[in-house]
Structures are given as structure tokens and as C-alpha cells.
Image 1 (cartoon, rainbow, N blue to C red):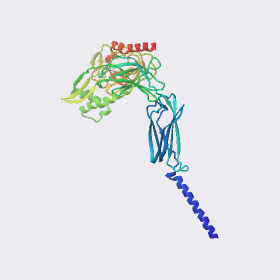
Image 2 (tube, rainbow, N blue to C red):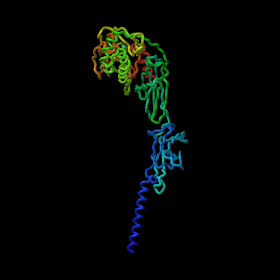
Image 3 (cartoon, rainbow, N blue to C red):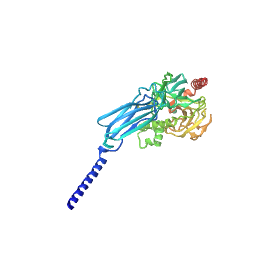
Image 4 (cartoon, helix red, strand yellow):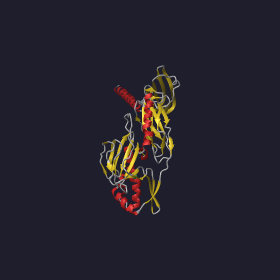
Length: 455
Ligand SMILES: [Zn+2]
């Protein structure tokens, strides 16, 4: 009897162990996994009913089925209902325009996504998940119209545009050019209006600019700025490098620059200075002058620029310089400013107010203050012997900001005068011309204000 009792309790123990093992097996087995399918839908809370909503569902044990519904004030509509017979780990669905979207007046809809996996968990029913996304509906493109603009743009030069952009959910406005540069417009005068200078770089054979407005729902409007393009031929200079120049100024600079340390060949030194050091110095200039403020401006006034009194022009903007030594081509570069000279250490006095955004030594540009005049417009003064302003200073018109010199890569005492628009060098000649300023700045602003005021 005792043996029998032992036998049956042993049997019960075996059974218990088996059940526990069974539970452990079920609990830890892939077949019985308890993780619900993962649902993701890329969205920012807006939908224009056009850009497909990208839904991604995946599960470790595979998906059995999924459903996608849309709910608006008229009720719930099934958009997708799919069952899988074979094991499918993941599914990617592009939810396109719903059939009734044209007549749909709702400002908000809900996308509901349900999925069930292949797990045996939940009494063989699988793990079930349901996710809801509320989306604000915006089917309207931003309203975009040009109010006033310069009639033409010259290669290497600038133009001004004023436009209106309106949208309830406006996300981004910029001016896209054919050469990759995006100009950032600044709010102007009254709500919904914007102003921007644009520039046609000397290195680009043509110019094209489109104003682009995007809203959060992905609606996009595009308007071309209809500028008449005026080509301009710039000078090509063939410059023969002399030994006295290489042994003098270049040797002196080579000693100073980090890039030319350990380089003894004078041609190599010149090449590094004219290419690598120049690129580094110009990158700094472009970085500093790319900024535009985003506060609203009600006006923009600029005086004719002529920073050096009684100066002679000694080199033009846009010269393409090819350097050779003993008949062999060595290097080339663009001259991106206007060189002006009068007496040595002459006073530099910009005719415009502005903020000093840089006042330091910058390699081949030597001592170099940069002044910001607003609207993305900057002026730069290179090769100075001394600087009388500090970064952060506000200057008045005709302030003696610096004195001419030959610091950096300069042979004689002169001023390298640069004008930049959002990081692009433009022809100083335009900003030194009263008529050009009147036609391209003053008249455009005056005209735009009249149109805006008329409403
Ligand atoms: Zn220069």
C-alpha cells in the first residue's frame, strides 16, 4: 500500500513537473510570445490627403492580419483589411487619398490601425494592438504672390524681391536658386509679407530663383521670380609670378600660416596659400555673412557706398586670375572684391550704419572688419593696417572703422572692399551706384508698400 501511495504521489510529482515545464515552455516559447505588433506611422499631426501616410507594422512572431480605418464625423470607414496565410514579419502600407476626401469637410480625422500577430498566446488568438492617430486636415496650398521685384539681375550682382505668403499652417518659406543656395526672406512691413535680396554668383553661368512656401501638411507653392538676366563678362588676368613676389610676400605669409609649415618649395607655398588658405578664409567669411535676422522690418535704407575717399580702383570685382611661373600654369582664383587705393593708411569710412560682426585677422584678407547692414547685406574691408572697431559694436555712418594697409595677401597699401548677400559675394559697383540703389532697392520698397497699403 505504502509503495502504491509512493508510486501515485511520484506520478503526481512527475505530472506537476511536466505541467510546470509545459508552462515554462509556453511562456518562453516564440509560439507563445506576448509582445504586441509594433505600429509606426510617420506624421507631424497634419495631413493634406495627398502625401501618402507611411505605415509600418512588424512583429517577431509574424503578422496574422491588420486593418486600417479612417474616422471622421460621418463615421468609420475601412481603408485596408488584410490577412496573411504565410508568415509575414512586417508590412509597409502607403495610405493614399481616401475616396471620400474630396467632399470631406472635417478639420480633423483619426487614422486607426489594428494588427494581430501569429502568437498562440491569448488562447491561440494572438496579441492584438490598436493605435489611433489624430490628424489635422489641410488641403490648401500656401497662398503665394510676388508684390514687387527688381526688373533685372546682372551676373555677379543682386536683386530685391518682396512677396506675400499666407497659410494657416505655414512651416517654411525660402528662395531656392538654380545653384543650390537658399535665401532666407525676412518678414516685411505687414503680416504675411516678406523681403529678400538675392544674388547671382560670378561662378554661375545662369540664374534662376523660385520662392517656395510649405505648410505642415506638406502642401507646397512655388513662384518663379521673373528677373531679366543680364550677362556680364568679367576680366581674365594672366599673372606671371615673379621670384621677388614669391621670395618676399609669399615667403613671409608661408612662415605665418599653419597650412604652409614645413613646405619649402615656393611654388607649392603659393599654391597652398592661393587655394587652401583662401578657401579656409572665405569659408569663415561666408559663415559670418550667411545670417539674416527674422524680425520684421518696416523699411530698409542704404546709402551709396564709397568707403575710401578720393580712391583709385586698382583691381576689379570678378577678375579671374590665372597664375603662372616660368610659363607653367600654377593656380587660379577669383577676386571677389573691389580694390581701392589712396594714401597709405587712409581712413576707411563706410557711408552706412551697421553692426560689426567680425573684426579680426583673417589669413590672406589680413585685418578684416565685417559690417552687417540688415536684410542679409554685409560689407567687408580687407588688408587693413589698423582696426578701430570691435565685434559687436554698432557704427554710425561715416565712422572711421579702420585704416588701409597691406596685411594679408596684399602687395601695396589698399582696401579690398567686399559686399556680400547671405554669404554670396556680389559686385560692389552696384552698391556704389545711386541709380542702381534707387531702381533696385528704394523704388521696389516704395512700390511694394503702396500695393500693400491698398490692401
Ligand atoms: Zn582685393
